[in-house]
Amino acid sequence: MSAYRHVPCLVCLLLACTLVQTGCWGRKFFRMPGESLETSAKTDSLLRVNSELQRRLAKIERSFEQQQEYSRRTNAQLKIDIEELKDQINMLQEMLRDSGQPYRTTRNVEQTHSGSEDTPAGAGEAPASSVTEPAGDTLDSLRADSVRTAAPAAVPPAEEMHRQMYLDFSRGEFQLALEESEIFLEEYQGHQITQEVLFIRGECFMEQKKYFDALKEFSRILQDYPSGNRVPASLLRMAIAYESIGEREIAGGIVRRLIREHPYSEEAAVAEDRFGRFLQE
Image (tube, rainbow, N blue to C red):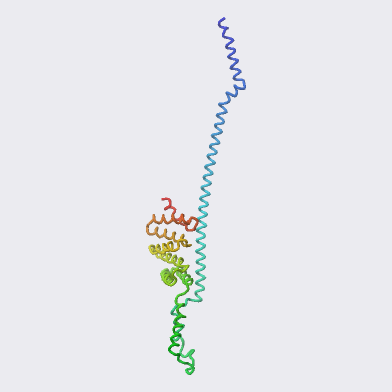
């Protein structure tokens, strides 16, 4: 009898296990770990895909920025090349025009007024009976008028001197351009194109590798014309001059100033391309 006393308990236990395994709540309970693992795997997969997409997006952004920077530098260099070609065309036009009408110097004026050295004897002379000797006061006044008439031709106009100076610089006649610029600075102090003349002087000294003299001219532009259109180019030339004499730190400082004060200028793009290693040090 004692053996059969535990049979109902075992039957109830078996029925309960069967209900648990076959019931809705039981199926959900036993399925939850599997579904959780599947959801976790899907989440990990989505995270990996998201990370890969972010990595690709960052790569594309870097490539786009590099392409923009390359395009900006290329456009800046093209603009500079175009300006140089325009200057060369203007130089050729000036050369063609000047070849047909050279400058009138003081010597030419004196020869024109004297005329006796190149004029054959008797040519243009009036008969002796019709020639009258002017009085002393009249002769002095005529000579004074002649001197006043010849004086302006001794020094050409400022714009003409600037064109000739640029032509001589373009031909490689640097010393001649410097001599002409000295005359210009003496005769036309404070003229509106003095800035351009100072820049040509600096360029001449750069071509002659006289970097300290060039630095003086470019520094004068920065001092006298702080808002002038030649300031960015002067800063770039100063950086090149300091680099040429071995002052790399000063050159880097000038490049940083150029980029800070004139970030959208063509000279800033050229400076970033040439002195990029200085900026990273």
